[in-house]
Image (cartoon, rainbow, N blue to C red):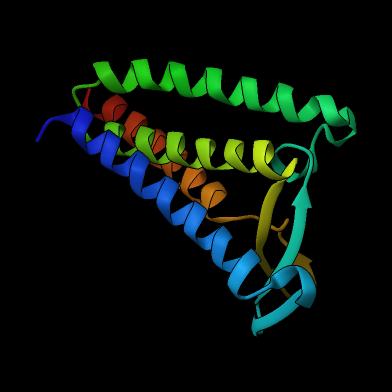
Length: 157
């Protein structure tokens, strides 16, 4: 199968999964009213409106941050799209699609709500991971695939 098709399918799948989960969290489950709901001893659904970037960095950018972060994300997505169009490796295409879909999902939130909808809260033994969403998880998984692919290519040479 054409790597562009694989990447495009992963992009679309990531975007749909992200936006559907956020629609459900906001409009059906109504997490903003519930604030935080324990699911497991190590996992909660916790409503957070993230006005910053990853892990709350650069949160003091104010209203301009929404535009700056969105433009920066879309510029990165464009560069990843060029990479996707040129890659001969299917795993790289899939990873790039996941990253691009997740990034676009978070841009949609910024433009629609002025902040990213975060709701997955993992914690254990007094440690707490910053609250994240499906898009963030897919971006992280895509990056992990790219790192593993790069390490495997180094070992092959």
